[in-house]
Image 1 (cartoon, rainbow, N blue to C red):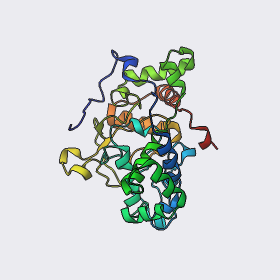
Image 2 (cartoon, rainbow, N blue to C red):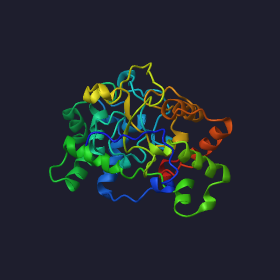
Image 3 (cartoon, helix red, strand yellow):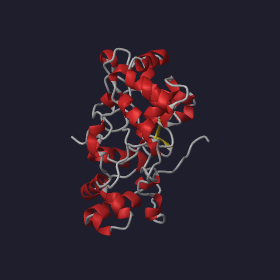
Image 4 (cartoon, helix red, strand yellow):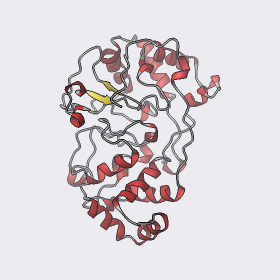
Length: 305
């Protein structure tokens, strides 16, 4: 499959609620997930034992660190805003540029990235093998014990559990029409009618296609991140990114791949200009923002502080 293109400025009056769906249940291996959770929280997997997956993807902060760019080993800064890990299982690819096809592939990336956790496959395996609990659990769960592939597999299995159920919007989709206020329902109507839903649709209201940033008005990234082009080297892929999920969006600022937009309202304005070619009125902005806040779901209780 190459790409899924949608013309993001076409209004959607016909499809309505059929383009968005409540979060489904996910089947996962409980033993692997429990092991993966320990690994996700463990800084010993990094080269200098100072950075864990959770440092950039805080589970109490809806899977992000609320920073423009995350800090890795030795104080190194990444060049792309860290996306949330919550509901990532529903994304069709991982990372902004889609370089990882699965959660397992994604889990390997930060472990080896020199500005994130900065380790090697052998280094990660050695760190895990030193821990008696890990050594025992891997032998129980995996026939070949501790391997880099199995480490990534268990982390990915844990990430399958990171789903934020019971949002107001999901309750609305499942039949409780009183779950949304009049203003929030009007915001949903604008979200559909103005064309936002043409890219932000499906279970995750995003995460299921690539799209060019700058459909109606050209967008120049001051951070010089060219998106999907960095993977494919195809000119057509410049400024092409995975459309982010809008679930929990009120909690995951700053926004976009470059983390340059700090408020949700400003993000809506930018999308209206560059993707839809529209200028929202003050009331329209307020209603769309109100709707987007209904997409905030519940974190697993143990990660609520």
